[in-house]
Length: 92
Image (cartoon, rainbow, N blue to C red; front, side, top):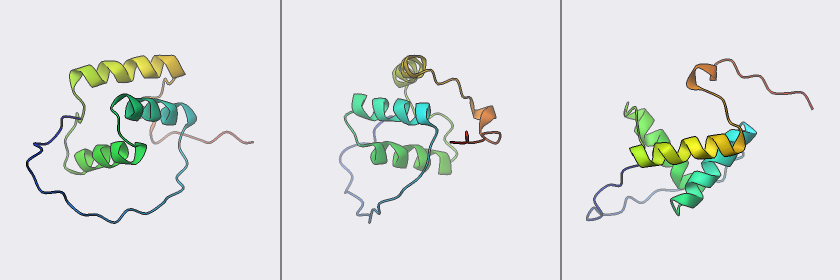
């Protein structure tokens, strides 16, 4: 995600712990990307959501998109946006 100018005042927020369930390979890609960018998974997810809420279609730089594709290949993630309303959890 392109970074904002650093001369802005920090925005104070209250964070809460959450227990969301996510597709396993997607989570691996997100964790790897967060590690690559030296940020927490929560910070990465907050940034993605804030961009999406503002209708910003591409929150990532071209270089980051290449890194995401590499992580997707590494972890075997083949899901696309078109799959998002058609996911069914595997029975244990």
